[in-house]
Amino acid sequence: VAPAARGLADDAAVVAPPLGNDLVATHDMMAEGVHFTPGCPPDDIGWKLAAVNLSDLAAMGARPLAALYGAGIGEGRDTGWAAAVARGLVACLDAHGCPLIGGDTIRQQGPTSLALTALGHLPHGTALGRGGGQAGDDLWVSGTIGDAGAGLAMALGQQPVVGALLRRYRRPTPRLALGLALRGIAHAAMDVSDGLLLDASRLAEASGLSAEIRLEAVPLASVLARTQGAAQAVRLAAATSGDDYELLFASPPDSAAAVLAAARASRTPVTPIGRLVAAGPSLVLRSADGPVPLPARLGHLHGG
Amino acid sequence: VAPAARGLADDAAVVAPPLGNDLVATHDMMAEGVHFTPGCPPDDIGWKLAAVNLSDLAAMGARPLAALYGAGIGEGRDTGWAAAVARGLVACLDAHGCPLIGGDTIRQQGPTSLALTALGHLPHGTALGRGGGQAGDDLWVSGTIGDAGAGLAMALGQQPVVGALLRRYRRPTPRLALGLALRGIAHAAMDVSDGLLLDASRLAEASGLSAEIRLEAVPLASVLARTQGAAQAVRLAAATSGDDYELLFASPPDSAAAVLAAARASRTPVTPIGRLVAAGPSLVLRSADGPVPLPARLGHLHGG
Image (cartoon, rainbow over all chains, first blue to last red; front, top):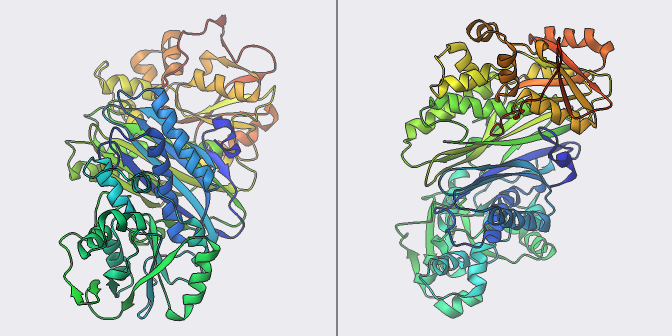
């Protein structure tokens, strides 16, 4: 807990956002049996709760200011388990320069449910959003897609465990440095939490446009391609699974050099995967062989 | 949901705090079976969640800026029930000028648990806290004490229902206007949520002083005195029950006129109940007949 919490002696914490900055606020919850399995290591649960909230700040281009943690500790969980969740949470917050300034911990009946409020800041009027995309913009995505979906299948015992992919599911990386670097470059941005195709259709809808995605361009982790191949079915599974916490963003074609410079500066790989066009449904999927019918399910709705 | 949430289209909400203001943040949770009974009217549950968080802002002297709501809706609760909770929450926020700008609603196993983050603002460096009390300060409390404790006994079926007292338990009033008016006057302040005696001992401890409370001075609601009398046992029960959400504050004797003017301006009654002294235990209780032994339990620890 940071100094602003005044040792939790007061009723509320006080922080001073930089002068003239806007405040960005997000609140995501995770419940046992819904967003994490009872057997998940507690420090990973805490890490992920922090990461999914910081990812929302990243999507807006905000710098973390402070966080407040709400823990409803379920029956049958001891204080050691609850402390391990909190340690994982603070480890992720610390890694991204976000002080924990307050919160509430209660005992509750039934399973555990956890909540985090993350506060960020940015210069007035510079927040990225989903609705700013323009026709002709390129669509880009950071990192690789589908790792966490494969990791979830491993956590559920449906696939042999590949440590790197399970870790991507349990300990996602919020793309804060990239989000900051994209301010003033990207027209629109969001984080990919519920599946790339579903989230791309949302960005297109918010911008009043159509998203065209080239399936072969969707970046797969080399370990995923090595273990599962890169057939169209694998790419479709990757593009419709959740929990990636990568950034999806739209920027004009003449900003490509600036986008690549932002990616280098933030040490975050980015890949162009399609574009926004004026006419058409919210999502169109193509491969080198022509249009690809949309799968029945574009994403995974439990994500944060 | 307020315009800042941009129709919930984006990953996070954006608000602009007034230039040069500090931000005040608090997060309190309420769980079914712990903080509210399964049979409590859902709009009262929502109201109370908002009120207990706004009360923390009031204690700091902050003006509400925005709130984020996290609802973990339990098994067996339908969307109508969840909507009624949200209506009660928004009714209380609206009544106190606090826009709801975001949050998260999930379905969870077991009973319902709810969380609110309330954000407030105040001029830099003016936040009230618990630790600022000085020896010789008078201790004051707003409103009346023990109403909610009697209301809780009624909610549990332990006492015949008196509507006004049950309402004080289920729909507390955050003392925001008084908190604002006390900035620059009070040395220390907090809200009384866990019992007047327990909270007074906390304020004294945070200030490194001793609190002397005159039991006869503790203000009782007329309806409470009428139905239960004002014997010492009734006063002790009132001063050790929770959920009052009144403000307890310390201010120098020569500020009494300013305190009374602040009370008038905020239409909130206040009563002097004792003082802070340099030496002694954190809490000393007196009556006209002399020292009163402290009860075994100074308060009620489930409160927010």
